[in-house]
Length: 264
Ligand code: KIV
Image (tube, rainbow, N blue to C red; front, side, top):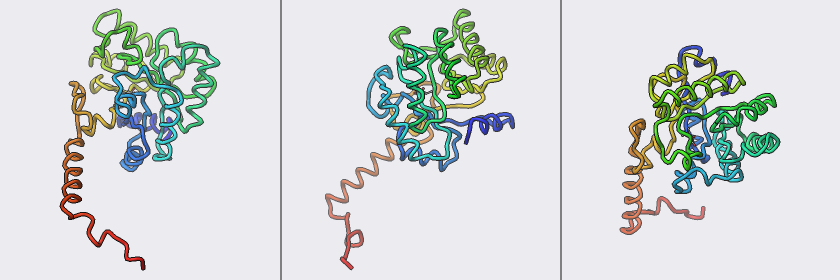
């Protein structure tokens, strides 16, 4: 899967599927299923590390998880999140940081874009590093916004979202994530720009959708926002299986001789 495959798929009327994943085991399953891309999202601070914020993500950790995902999914388009403040200091530092993620196995990087970042994003694209923007709810700026709130509810916010989406498209970003944006606003953006729009909590009028794998599989029971559909009760299934293992070991049902070696 490449970015041009994404564009062809959407041009043929089929939405893009993207999942955030953070390790080789999940990445391999996602690739086997034929999902179009894996986002090594900084959401791993929640799912992998148990943190309450993504602000704590570091570039070194993102490189490590990108390598792990690449090991599991060699033929899937991988997009790595640029962690908080790794694309803000200077263009040179941003280029160096993005290059490290590409060398770790990503084909593109994602940035939570504000106006001030546009010249830097422009430079990344000119240097041949594909960029996915991320607008709407931006978890890296949670301390400013004060919560994981819907974005695009006022005229000012709607204009700002449209402005950012158009600017990213003009610069040549290949796609933009719209997170927690009202359906009508998403529709306007998707219709107004040629760039692919990937939604999460943004309704059906996007070029594609993204969910965090752990959420979609029901491994995060305390996270149940309106936009999330859980395709599996993963936690419950795992609890049942692990209880069975515990019982079988404790009662001598596992292992049996058939699980052992005879030495021959
Ligand atoms: O970090 C992440 O997984 C993301 C998605 C929720 C879009 O940014």
